Image (cartoon, rainbow, N blue to C red):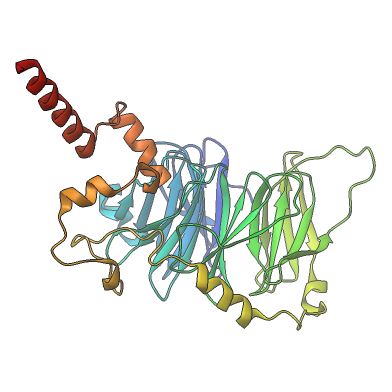
Length: 358
């Protein structure tokens, strides 16, 4: 069976949960849907630039896509016959780099995006707005998964680390998994304790999360002198018995991963104690975006009634700003003009005029 409706490389392929539909997204900026061996439909120019990420959300009709410029769109494919603009339910443009991968937390109706701009974004689909944005990491975020019963978010990076975030504390990661010698280009969740990573060194690893350690190399190890092709993507079968991987050598390999089901589990790790220690260092609402009223629910102790907004702006240090805000300030305000600086300049000028008059 061959489908060639895309005019450029097909970057993302996703099955619906029931296996009846296949969704595809391409560098040619289009989205396609296949069912019963036939192409059901295609949306051309679905994004203004090449699409990189695709995720099924619900009901076989709602999907999310992300492109090379950081735009995320939510689609209702049932409305595609009426035209593209009718099928776009919402759109987010808060990222500045390629959307590497998307993950969905259904109970909260929120999606998490890993981006090559070095930040992880969380988007509330109910409110149709950005919910939280992580600090800026000096590395590409290449993939993202939600695990540990939705308590943890894991982001892999181009530097070979996996950043671990606690849900609702998205500003900075509170733990890391190290040990990969190069970029982790993709990862999938095996179960609540294990992820499988695809690394540019050509190896696929099974990695334990809390406790954090590499537990196995999956597939055949590389022979000495063998040419190394980085693993671009991996996919796990629905029964978690087979893993498919693809590389730049134009080969797809199928690996038996049933050994992970019968692995020896680490029962000595005190996860409750670990969580208690993490909670001590978490900052309130870290990474969350302010709501329109400027006040975060459940964080009343951080606000004082009757505070002067001007004095608040003067007291705030430039170092307290998020890195993303600093980057925007540098573009929009290269001379670093602030209210505090303006007042200081006015006072200096007033003092100079006073002495000139004498």
